[in-house]
Image 1: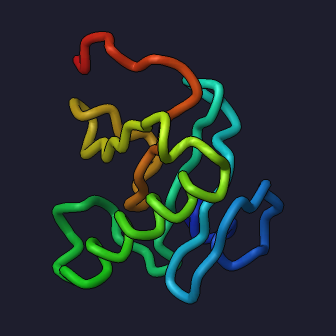
Image 2: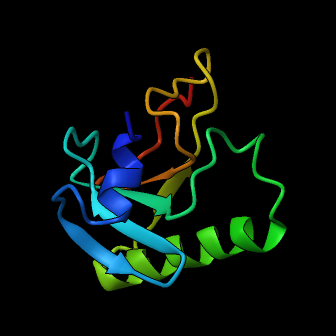
Length: 111
């Protein structure tokens, strides 16, 4: 069975696309944890950040997140970027992705 995020990245599955580049797709999270909750997905499948050795891709992932934050108008006010890794890190979909959270003060504990 294909990974759900691979299905979204290849447009086999519908999602709300906020931003897209050649290597990434940015979608709205279906269970938002903040007023603005986006997921930045590489189109190439990596189970975790530990598996990805492509430094350029990882750097571009942050650039895409920043561009998406600007596009939805939260860059100046602030946002949080999170990459959950493996079970204890809270990862539930094993396709590398980052969460961009914004739209309210995020001053609470991280863990």
